[in-house]
Image (cartoon, rainbow, N blue to C red):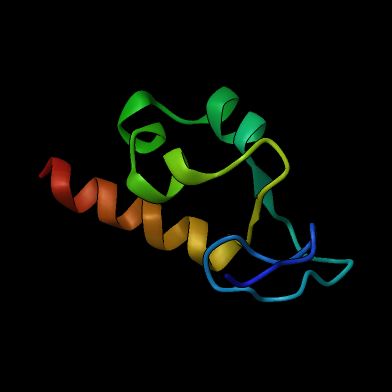
Length: 68
């Protein structure tokens, strides 16, 4: 099992840089609709997990594509 630091991306393990905008499960729940919140990777996140902008955008694109 791979152990990640709190500030590593939950999906790709990228290390967070100070200037980057990342999301956590609370931000995702407050910002996005239930379709995105039900994505498999989002459901697997814990309250301490972080996700980088690139991975979040990829998930958004997948959800949008599935809705078409």
